[in-house]
Length: 272
Image 1 (cartoon, helix red, strand yellow):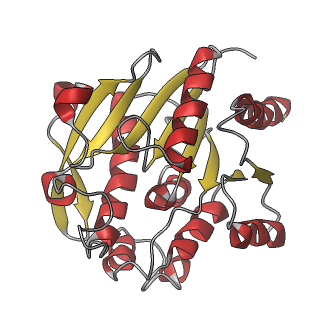
Image 2 (cartoon, rainbow, N blue to C red; image 1 turned 180 degrees about the vertical axis):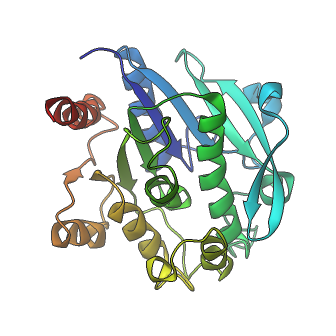
Image 3 (cartoon, one colour; image 1 turned 45 degrees about the horizontal axis):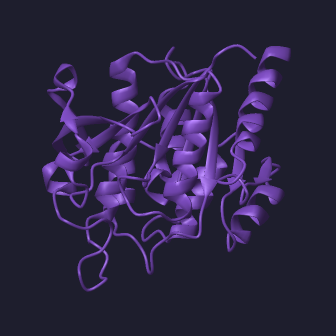
C-alpha cells in the first residue's frame, strides 16, 4: 500500500513519560508505522513532569497565538515539539501553563486526582484537533489512545465531518486499564454543551468515570483496539453496537499487527 498519513493522539508516550502499556504501545506503533514508510504525527500533553531541556522541546513559533475555548474561557494553546531519539519522527506537545505546568500528570503527590482533569481533557482533545488543522496535515488514520484523548473521536465526527482535513479519516480508539478512580468533574459536560453538543449526546457525563469516557470514544470510532486486560466493558459495548473490536494486547511486541488494522480500514475505503 502506498504511503499514508497516520495521526497518533495519546495521553502518554515513552520516553517522555515512564514506560507502561499505553506509553510503550504508542511509541512502538508510531515507530513501526513510520519505519514502514507511512507519514506519522504524534500528539501528547506537555505534562510539567517532562524535562524540556533533557528532551529538547522547543516551541513551534509558527503555531503561536492559538487559543482553545473551554466553556467561556479563551485558554492559550502553546505547541512544542521534540524529536524521538533514534526514530526519525517528531512528537507535538499540547501545552497550557494553567493546565499542564504542575510537576505531575493526573494526580498530586498524595494521589488525589486534579479537580480540573475535566477541563484538561477538553483542552487536550480540542487542542490536538485544532493544531492538526492549523498544520494543514490531512490524516488517513487517526489512532486515539487513552481516556484523556477520548473526546477526539466525538469532536471529529460532530464538528469536522465536512472539514477537508478530517472528513475522510478513519478513527481507531485503543482502550487501556490505565484510568482513574472516581469521576471527573461537571465542567467536562458543561464544556461540551457550551460547544453546542446536543444534551442527549452528553447524557451520563455529569460525573464521568474512566469507563464512560472509553465507551464515548468507542461509540464514534471505526474500530476499537483492546490494549490491555480489564477492558471487557469496552468489548461488550462494541459487540452490542456492532463496532469492530480487535485484541491488541500483543501490539507492543508485534506492532505490525496494528498496521494491518490501519490498512484494512483504508482498503475498505478504496473498495467503496
